[in-house]
Each structure stands twice: as structure tokens, then as C-alpha cells.
Length: 390
Image 1 (cartoon, one colour):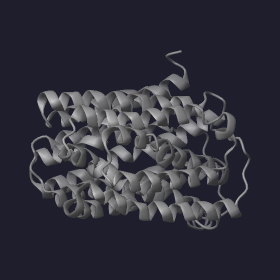
Image 2: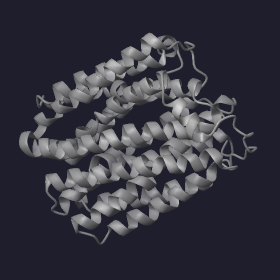
Image 3: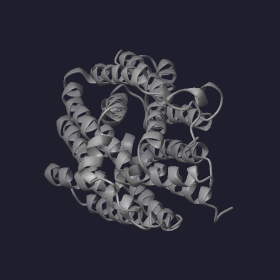
């Protein structure tokens, strides 16, 4: 079992999302602990997303042409360890801006490569993708609780220690992934530029737009939810529990994604479900609801994140040629988790400074635009109702 591809991928996803569970909700709080303003926090978070935008496609093109899928992942994992270690002595916002760009590139640059690699292995029948990916969501929850408790006990500097521990775990897990050896691709019938231009037209462009806007609408949540909820008087353990509750529902969604009505939903329908859930989630969170209602709203993470994520994966699995599998994922990652999320994070710094928690409402705009793109996609595309990646 320990040598099986499914176990190795589950170990990697577990390590990666263990790190992300410390980084996503709490890195802005670490920055706040170093006495940076809300505006600076917004720009530093945005710099990390810009690094993801610019570097992910380059790493993905390497991954698509590499004869061993594991090699690019290993390089990114090593870079992740080194760059986060450089954060330790730094207090200057300008230096942190540069380091955030590099850490965003190294950490998030792994996502499209590992997803494309895992989907390829899953389609070969080596394991089922949904449950393996759900392991990562499980460790994300553990990290939320553990890091929140550690912050309450030892202060915000423990956040970076936890991130560094996680980065080392990613490197170890990456080294244990299958090598992913494959034969070189046969000569292409058209140039990469023409192929990518064709890929970025038609239904793929609509799927990309829907995914980028709906995922990007998490900008305020990722950058300022922990800071906003702390200002409302909630402890870090409670904040960790809020994040964990959303991811718990995400796990259930991913685990069941290949069964019943979820397995029959088209990619466009999943994206539309994500957009609708996102509008409701951010609109109601802007009203600063009481804690029990906040926990209920966190259940919508299954739609705003998981349905959107799975919808694009399903679309790409059937529309992107294998030679561009990682590149297709990287383009989505660069837009959804890079350009749109970076802009949303930067804007969020201004709106949080002016409006506080009510700034959540600004995220309705990209979510609504993404919903429109998903509905248009449903009209122009047709896909099998049960996907191989589940």
C-alpha cells in the first residue's frame, strides 16, 4: 500500500495542504504581527499571487515536455523551502513584497503540475482522484486547528515555523512520488503558439473565465478573513475552526463527486453552482453575522471552491490535449489564483481599511461575472455526464 501511486499522491496532497492550511488563513496575520498596515498586507499577498501568475505557466510547459513528471515538482518544492526560510529575519515591507512574489511562485506553482500529473495517473486507472485529493483537504483542516491553537499559545511568529515545517514535508513527499516516466510526445502538427491560441478560444475561454472569476472572488476571504474575525473578537482557534468547517464540507463534496447527482453534473453546471454559492456566501458574510451563522455560511465553500475546482478539472480533462495538460491547468491557476486573485487581494486591502468586514461584499462582482460565463458555457458545450477523473 505504501508504495502504491494512490498512497504517494495522497501523501503529497496531504503535505501540500498541511502547509497551505497554515499559509492561507494565517500568513496575513503573520504580516500584521510584524506591524504592517492593511494596505501593505494586501499588496504583499497580491505579490505572492503575481508570482504564481508569472511562473506557473513556465513550470507547466516544462512539466508537459519533461520525460519525468516528478522533476518539476521537486524543484518547486525545494525552492519553497528556501524562500520561506528567507522570510524569518525580515521586517521590511519592500523585501517581504519580493519574498512573497518568490514564495507564491514556488508554492502555488506546484498546483497545476501535480493536478495534471495526478489526473493523468488516475485516468490510467491507478487510483481514484477524488478521495486522494480529499486527503489534502483533511490535512488542511488539521492545520487550521493546530496552527490556530499554536498562535493563541505562542503568538503569530509560530505561523512561519509551521509553514517551514510544512514546506519540508512537501519536499519529502515530492521525492517519493512516482517518477512519471513517459515517452517523448510525437512531433506536433502545429506550433505551440498556434495550438495554445486555438486552446484559448471557444468553450475553453468561457470555462477559464468562469473558473478565474469565481475562484478569484475568494480574495477578501484569503487575505483578510482571519484579520477581520480577530477584530470581531474571535480567537485564533475559533478562526481555525471556521476555516476547517468549510474545508470539511469540501472533503465530503470531493469524496462524493463521482456518485449520484454530483457525478452527473456537467462541468458548466458545477461552475455555475460555484458562482451562485459564491454570491450568497460573500453577500451574507459582509453583514457580520453571528458565529453560528458564520459556520453555516462556511458550508458554501463546497460550492464556491470545490464545485468550481472540479468543474474546471472535468472540462480540461476532456478538452485539453495531453501534451498541454499541465499548461491548461497552469493557465487556469495563473488567472484564477494569480491575476484575478491578486487584484482582488490588492483591492481588498483598501476595502478592509475603509469598511472592515463589510468589504466581503465587493467579491460579489467577480462571482456574478463568473456565474454568467458558466451559464454561457452550458449553452455552447456538451460533455459526458460522468468523468474519468472522478
